[in-house]
Amino acid sequence: MVVVARSLQTRRRSCCWAAARSMLLMLGVLAMKGCPASSMDVVVTHKMNALNGTTIRLSCIFNSCYKVDNSKFAMNWTYQETFNDTEEMFMTYKQRMTVLRTEKFGDRVVFSGNLEKNDVSFTISDVQLTDDGIYNCYVRNPPDRQQGKGIIKLNVLTELPPPRDSTIAVVVGASVGGILALLILSMVVVKCVRRRRKQELISDEQKIEEEGKTEGDGGTEEGTKHAYSLPEDKY
Image (cartoon, rainbow, N blue to C red; front, side, top):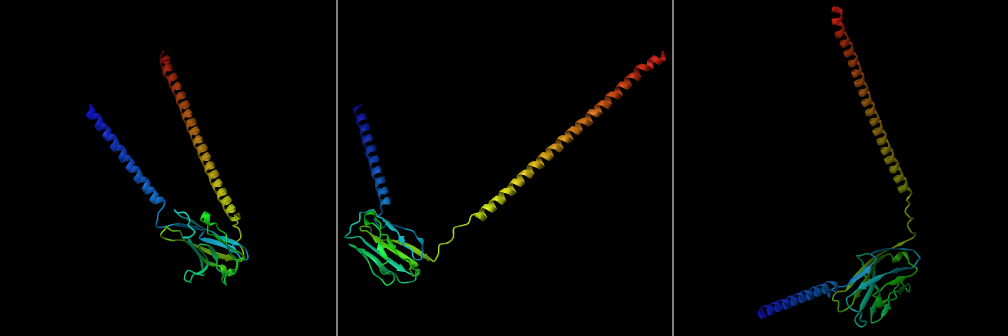
């Protein structure tokens, strides 16, 4: 009995250790999936519209598995007219945020993010038609091995597009609904007419059968009278 009890205890311990090891492995896998050490995500709005002469904020937010270390963190904003053109840097971060004064933007660019919230967004005031183009947000946060990148295509418009007119859609919807209502109504009418005709045919057939039965009964009575009157004539 003692040997059996010890063997049961040993099996229980081995099962507990196996379960613990499997749990640790699962947690390790989840940790690796949830926090890869070789990449980071950058969230931007890929296409944006701005009205000429207004102010617009270009948002760039990064997700990293590591807390920002100001001595190691690095960020660059660049502009290019098309994807084939050379990128022009106008904002950078190396231990401090620096807005580079360029001929293109002058003093119209201002940092409007919050590094503590992983936000490196900026704002352009008095948007010009020449600001139309591609804006690239580069972020590096060691020990993440690869830098993150976000691309924004900014379209500068002289006037905002008019709101979509839903009148046509309403008219089309009403027309389709009216046509469907007419079809349903016509189907109901046809069905009622067919049902009435069927009932009339059934009633006509019943009348004919009743008339036939009535005529048959009259002929039988007359035949019966003749049959009983013939013997009376003989006597």
